Image (cartoon, rainbow over all chains, first blue to last red; front, side):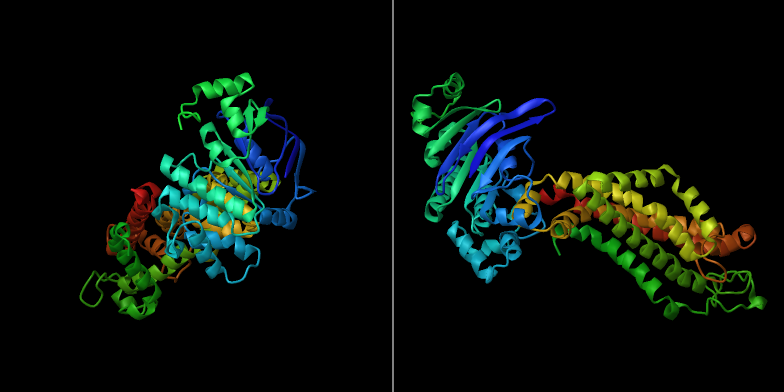
Length: 247
Length: 271
């Protein structure tokens, strides 16, 4: 997936300004920045929930901006998203099993019940969770179910928008471990968006630092944490309680 | 049944009893509600005619029971129509936005700008008397409230992550509407509808009372009150019986609506 010269503004304020990066299959790219720096807007643009003002999103060699209907559906077959609040990412009136099965039903998969069971086991849950409602499970379990739904198709790109922010530290570590394992095993590219710089060495192969809608630094996580170049990243590191050393 | 639904049981039993009476009215009436017996006109309540007779000697109890069928069936059908049509219109407007939304919402603004009863009287007057025309007059204006409510609910829901997740799952717009949006707005719409039953019964009875609804000799509570209004001081049972029936029915459905609102409140669900 390649993002080329993407720009977005809301009410005359530039939220994203000339964003360029790419992700290869199996690679995990971390996007870090303060609240309001444009991280979630970037995720929404890539996932086609909102259009960008300028620029291109190339996915699997195809420009995906402004796609509709069947073409967008085929893009979503390969691109999935994990949201910040796990409970809100499931329809409260449907069971987890129903929600995990939904993408497979829409794309004509067979043996869906069996697949749902296998997916639940794959993410560390038991098949019994299939009958539970989102409010009947913990945040960590709900996020695991969300991961199961996200990998239920032929996912090539997983967008994790603050996917671990609403979880406590121990659950966060387990979910990150699971994501890392699944992305490696299935050769899935992962765009891991977070405001927590300290999480990135655990999952990301590469990191971009966003500040006021611009990429201010790019590199491997350990280098960015231990030897930041841009003044903003230096400040971010200075204020980040959990640095690599603290870990 | 979950514990939180238990407070509903008494009200559901009462409302269910009313609906039972309405559905099986022809089998429950002690006398034929339409047979006139002028020799026994305006007989006060007695063992043979528990609620007395009207000016044509018809048994008032039988007419009240038969009137339950006319009034409740018409009210519930009207409510079902306006709530389903209004909710669908509102949900589509909320999901689609654009020109469809602008056009339908301005149209609903026009209807909301009229006092409902005044509009219904005017429309029923133009369409002519009759229960169907009275219901149609109320339906023309009644859908707009449900459209507004469901649209505002959809505007909140459509930004929820599970709607975006459904889009990424490849669910069609219709699938999102029927699987994700409507089930999640059903609670508040249902509560509004339950609270509206009383109002609609009153409005239909009101139109019949004014001679714009059910026409003689149809047994309908509003029409019965209209027929008996001149006898309020001399033969009060003729007007009190249908009046009390309206009062009890409206009270039961209002209490049911209130209780339904309490048990369907998501916050109380989570607590």
